[in-house]
Each structure stands twice: as C-alpha cells, then as structure tokens.
Image (cartoon, rainbow, N blue to C red; front, side):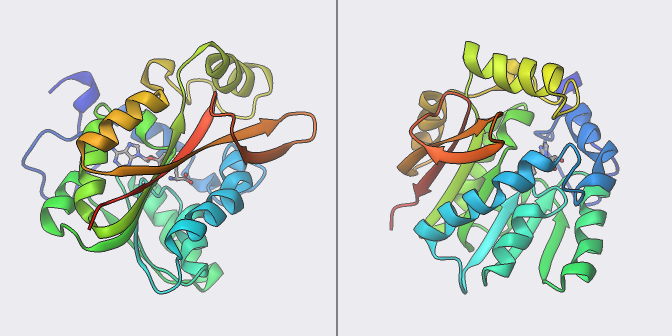
Length: 249
Ligand code: SAH
C-alpha cells in the first residue's frame, strides 16, 4: 500500500482490492465536516455554485423521478439539491464524519437521501447499470486514479443515462486562481485544499470518459468574478469546468 492508497477512516464495507482513495484527502474533508452547511465557511464556493450545477444537470437529465447517484457527496449539498428537484438520490463518500453530517442535515431539510460509505468501484461491481444519472462533482482532483472513478461511474449508469463530472483544469491560470488566489490570497479555501498536480485538463477528462464508453455532450466552464462575487457558466473552461456525458443505449 502506498501513501496515496491508505485506508481512509474505518471502512465498514468490504473492499478486497486496494482502495482508490487518498487518506489525507479524506481526512482534510472530514476535519471540516461540521462546516458543510455553513454557507459562510470554506464550503461557501460549493454552496454558491450549487444552483448553477443543479440547473445544468436538470437541463440535460431532467431530475424529477430519476434515480441518481452522487459520488463524493460530502455533506450532501448537491445530493439534497437534486432530492429537492424530485430525484431519488443516493450519496456516497468515504469520510464518516461528512456522511454523519449529511444524514443529520436531512432532519433539518426534511428531504430524503440514502447515504452510504462505499467506494464507487465496489458499488459499480454490486449494482451496475442501476442509476439514470450519476454525478461526481469536485472530487476527481482528490483521488489517485480519476480514470477508475470515471469507469465506475460509467458502469453505474443505465444505458441512455447521464453522467456529470466537474473538476479543475491544469494550467498557469488555474494554479494562480484556484491555488494561489483562493487558498493564499483570498483565503476562500484552506491552504492545501488542492494539489495542482492532480488537476485535470478537459482533453484528459475527455480521453478518460471516452475510454469508459461515455459520449461527452457538453463541456461548460464555471467562472468566478471576485469583484462581483458572482459565479457563471460559460465558454471559459480555464479554471473550473463541468461536463455532461451520455452513456449510449
Ligand atoms: N461533491 C461534493 C463535495 C466535493 S468535496 C460537492 O461538490 O458539493 C470532495 C469530496 O470528495 C469530499 O467529500 C471527500 O470526502 C470526497 N472524496 C475524496 N476522495 C474520495 C474517494 N476516493 N471516494 C469517495 N469520496 C471521496
């Protein structure tokens, strides 16, 4: 087992293979877990972009009545949003504390989401082709093998279904804005939140989704204007971006 493949927290479900997870990454999120629903906290950017990504997902996949899996769900910001839009949502993550907060928050919101601690690769072996929609947002840049996560997401999706990913592009601008700007200058994120080497270029994501048998339908950028403090979807994919993929019938 290498440093990047250590066992995160107490894994309760059976994992026979080496886990595709980085224990320090999981611990980073677990340490902040009590803040998931504090909209002024380190998780503010995720709350701020939530309506944009929800609208994007709903536009393509039509969430009402759909069976949806949210991979790397954290405290459930996106999972709850999709449940509120009428989807039947399962959220998975490997951080116990985040899942605990996600479950507790359901009492506050009155929504229904099933939360499980299970590696996405294991769930793909257990329940292939069982979700209409699979979402995996802001998570690929935290795992040792994004290709393995993408392949598992593709397997979990029903033929004709939709798979959505968002992540950070890798270039000088994304380093300046997502690492130096957000972590060191503006203090929007804790230092060390992002490891630049793990950022993924759209071309690399495209190769991995294609290899997993997914067709990329749309690639859109998510930009942040620090002056107006407004996030927008648009053509600029230099820093944060999102893709909508379809699994062929
Ligand atoms: N998808 C959520 C949270 C993003 S933060 C959102 O966009 O709002 C990244 C999340 O990925 C954290 O909750 C972290 O615990 C989770 N994560 C990191 N590595 C993981 C892995 N290997 N398997 C599952 N979840 C993982």
